Amino acid sequence: MKNATKLSRKHIIRHHIHKATSSEYFRVLVLRTLGNFLLFSSLFMIGKTLYSPVREEIKYFINSKLNKQYIVADTITIPPPAVESKGLLARAFNFKQVEVLAPSDPEFSIVVPKIGANAKIFSNTNAGNEKEYLDVLEKGVAHTLGTAFPGEGGHIFLFAHSTDYFWNVGNYNAVFYLLYKLEKGDEVNLFYKGQRYVYRIIGNQVVDPSQVEYLTRKTNREFLTLQTCWPPGTTLKRLLVFAVRVAE
Figure 1 (cartoon, rainbow, N blue to C red):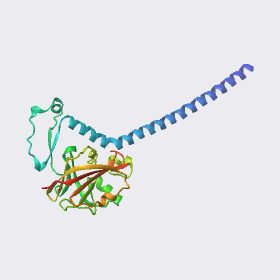
Figure 2 (figure 1 turned 45 degrees about the vertical axis):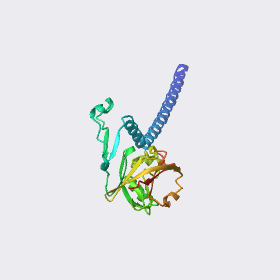
Figure 3 (figure 1 turned 135 degrees about the vertical axis):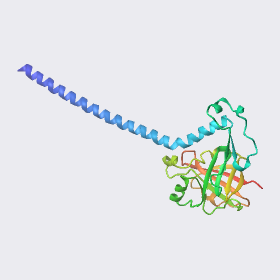
């Protein structure tokens, strides 16, 4: 009888141990699954946010190392270099040492040869209407309603790569991600109604999103402002790049 009681107690103890072990196993399994889900979700959001700027950075780095040249369509004055002048890496990947940038839309577009930027501009975009300008920025560059057009002698304000939330940055056109690479003297081309207008960079400035006074800049010469988010892949600040029209 005593032996039967002992066996019964051992069975009960083993049952409780097994039950506790199973419960602990499932708790650990759930926590581990949840942790993995949160980790991969975070990595996905980071990748989604930074994919476009990282891609542009890598492209710019490779082009710089291989001395790639971008030439605006109607200014081909330098003949393309001979095939023999290409490096081994350029030949291996069939890399084009010289690429001609024809405007995306001769009616209104921007071409920046240093960074290989080429995009259509959508005119008279209301910078105060979030839905309107976010729709535009998925397709190209926005021209701000109320600012001048090329050839009018006033202040032209263009912006791109903007968003409502930082994790949405990757959804928008990446044409302005590399604006910070531009230096004094670099060329910006605007095409408007079939005519080309050339501007030279004169400086830049990082400002808070609330500083909107630059939209209404007064000028006695044709002045161009390009705006994008800063740093690339975030919406923390705004980078403004300033240029003036080159005299014909």
